[in-house]
Image (tube, rainbow, N blue to C red; front, top):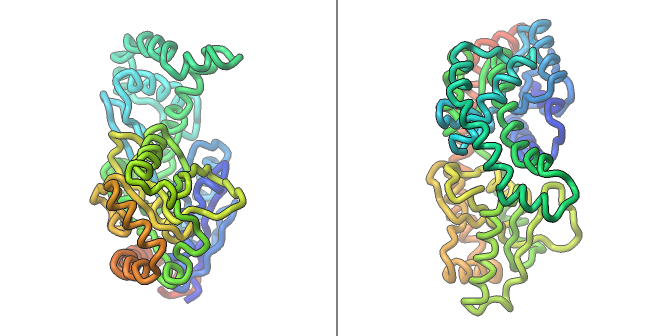
Length: 396
């Protein structure tokens, strides 16, 4: 088989932010005989995979122009964010109150009418924004006297307006991604997802553009990697990496306190925080913590768990099992002293580590392999992909 996959990356400011998706997609395709490359351009002689992030105006225009020039070349979008609707306003990861909804409703109008690559505002969207307009002054007051803004005024030399800007930046960024995704669906032949629960939010857009949502890819890797490298050269401690929110920091501190309460603080080294791209010297931790982003967060994080197991080669520890993804069953579920004891045993006794891998990781990998086989079968059966390969002289 000589099918080519091109993973397009130019729509992302920092490739580090999608590194785990790229590694995962490489393994899924390459282990099944595909030739996979990353590129800052689209390839008319390959199936093009584009991971969601459509805030960049030049990149959006490039993709649309490529689609117009090469309508026969397959483009597959990867959806990675959740559409949430609050107070008549929808956006990616919008878990806010009526204040944030009112703010986003007017940001929505401004972006849609300023950006030619976004879908224009409808009369209904205007009515929603007008209805929420009285909330805007209250939202500004709320932000001005928030803890974040007060800290900015008291401890930094910049103005309180800059503090407000920092507080709203993430909301605007995620809404730009939401609008970009809506707009770019028309360029796709199909959508695949990183989480099953992304489907309900994107299906209305997909159906409007006659684009099939064909399934979810599961993180996957060779079980030999786990057997040979799990915990190798690691310290007995727990670390948290990536986006370390306030809630996640609290959970890490709780575990640090528990090591003292249960008299195990001499066995465990101090917990660690690691940011994206942190290449600090020294041994990594044998265990990694994966709490939800916030106390009210609704979704599991399979990609974080994938990175722990198959990239960092440590054992993931979760504080909540959402029962949304089979990879959650490959984790330790934190429950105080007994979990700390289990962590010590896994670290100190190779036979227990082997048993853990056989009982938890290997069954997950079998599920992931079966799922991904079915997903690729659907992908290769798409009319656009089937026609593309026939015209290229390649038969699936």
